[in-house]
Image (cartoon, rainbow, N blue to C red):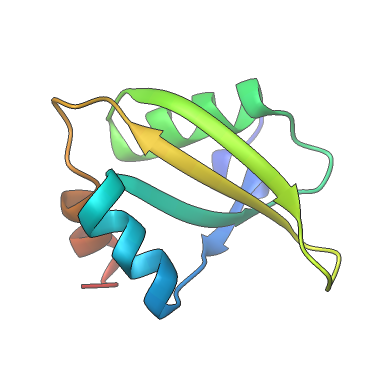
Length: 87
């Protein structure tokens, strides 16, 4: 298994991404451009010991890959955000 921190680079923190944590149980991460959704999901689950429902990705105008990671309802994105020191 690849080091999960090679895939997950860092949390993407903006007002909008904090809103997603609260409203939609999602966390936004900047990830390796070569990583696919399955790898992102596995890395995130391994690091934060949560279950991921869905991963959406996009490449932003700066060429970074953003992953919108939606957690399963029994896990709270806010708890992960607190662990990361975002909130």
